[in-house]
Length: 86
Image (tube, rainbow, N blue to C red):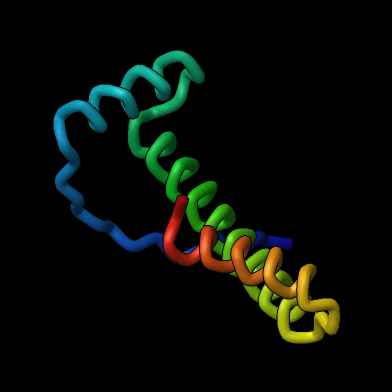
C-alpha cells in the first residue's frame, strides 16, 4: 500500500541575517538542512500558539464562571497579563 506524501508548497521568505545564521547553526548541530530546521521551528511555533490560545480560552472560562470576587480579580489580572503582557 502506497503512503500519500503531504502536499508541499514552495514558499520564499526573507529572514534577518541574524535569524538565518541561528537557523543554520541549529540545523548543523542537529544534522538537518536549513529548510528542515525552518519547518520544525515553524511547526513548533504553530503548536505553541495553539496551546497559548487554548490556555487563554480556559482561563477566560474560569474567569467567567468564578463567583468569588477575589479569585475573579486574580483571574482577571492574569487574563490582562496574557493579553497585554507584563
